[in-house]
Length: 168
Picture 1 (cartoon, rainbow, N blue to C red):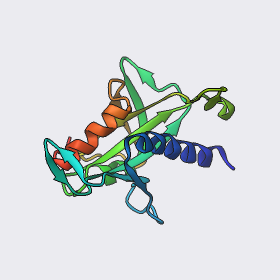
Picture 2 (picture 1 turned 120 degrees about the vertical axis):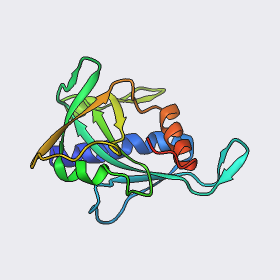
Picture 3 (picture 1 turned 30 degrees about the vertical axis):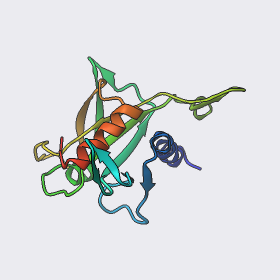
């Protein structure tokens, strides 16, 4: 399998592992025409004593082993099609770009010991909802603060915001 396909599969597995811990339901469209690689939804999500049925977020996943961190943010070159599909206020479910940083050697992506397994390195998120139009024709450099790391807590927070119909 080519390295780009391996990165795609690993990034899905990374997010799905966190989603499994939280009890979120992942789903994948058969055809990716709208820059959504993965959806996460919650069944009967409880927000402040009120049950919300099936809040969901939509995710465009990218994976890189390049050193793109500088001055507290990632500088990721996103294809214009993905940029345009993720931005704008005419989207009903919150959409997020998630960029997973991995070691350059695939054999270093996962470490398995007798009592645990760890996935390397970290994944970060950014909402492009209010980003401006671009005149670029190929790629747009998107900045993602390194403080926006994907953790169980941050992923749950994004689902909670979706349940309240809050868009970032």
